[in-house]
Image (cartoon, rainbow, N blue to C red; front, side, top):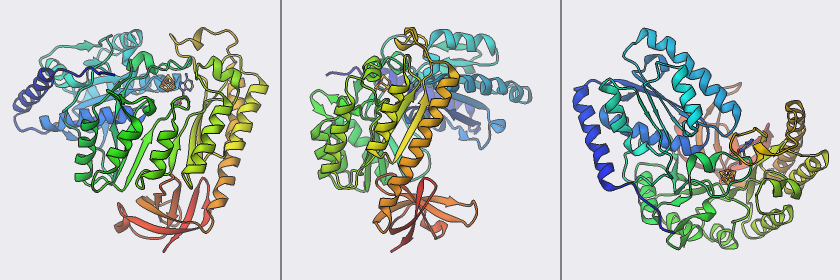
Length: 462
Ligand code: 5AD
Ligand code: SF4
């Protein structure tokens, strides 16, 4: 599959605009604040925008109230995310009263829904710039127009192209994300992503490897490869298992992760690539969404409960200690008590190490929004509570098998609630708490598990 790339001349234009803005700022260091909603893909886009801003001379603001430019990178996966965005953008009005020169911008998936973007623009006259997910590369050009006094509203309808070569300012830490593909072709019937992120397109393998090399050189020892469905990565015939093997050979990379896998495309080759590549972590995020075959069909997921369980078997047989996490939706149109029971029994059967649960949220324009048999909100809420109780039981049960087990954790920070303890993750993503001090942050330590704590584990250094 051949992907389209943003033309080199456009990227050159972006760098030229960055330079012009830098000149215009004349050595001043205005401050920016980016508020990001939603998934890691949005986080990654925000890091790219931050990279461009810092090249112009902007510095990161600690608080929104101190900023000269506030950007909201929005999400529309569920209604709740949208409501929060409208509320928080509304608050900017007050900040602007104290700082009339403040630039306010809104971008991301929610803006890709034209009528929502228009509503936002009409309701908040102080918003200076609105742009979609396909305009990332031309952000400097758009900002330049805003600085020239224009109110800019730019959302392309076409399927996006891949921007390569933009600067990036990665969030602090030792773990970072590298995008391998954009968009989604699956059209799960509940999901808005294919409508706002466009068709699937894969980055070139050499660009991915080069970006991971740069991240490793900057000191990141853990990298997560990102895509809506990494299993359909295709760089003119080079598929995901091969990409994973290539990336795993990057020097300095201690841990390699990937997200998200679609059960319909997860191949035995990928399971074997995980098994045979030591720095690929023993963890897979494999959203099941439902345990009922009838609902899976209506969701257009294109696999069955039985197929999903076969995948789990294959993973557990070949990747020792593998942990599986998942996403589950309850209250999908027409879901019955029996369907819900199928989901609950699947959760018990698999023993997920974590499961993210959601009440179905109607997304206008998707196939499920048009289905009969929508479930009342209070029923969804009640089912979500029941699901969460089963998840909790299952996760805690799965923790017991860790007692006495040895493994390695990457220390990420200090938890100061009660007795201060350092925490970090095992390759399986399980969180482990240990005694220690802040000098340990960013380093790897061998631990033995001695107990459990809520959803996580307690260990001692060995
Ligand atoms: N309602 C509820 N949950 C949804 N998700 C995606 N779309 C919806 C929706 N309309 C969930 C899925 C997906 C996760 C990222 O968000 O479980 O895997
Ligand atoms: Fe949405 Fe399905 Fe694509 Fe995931 S695979 S982004 S749930 S359409």
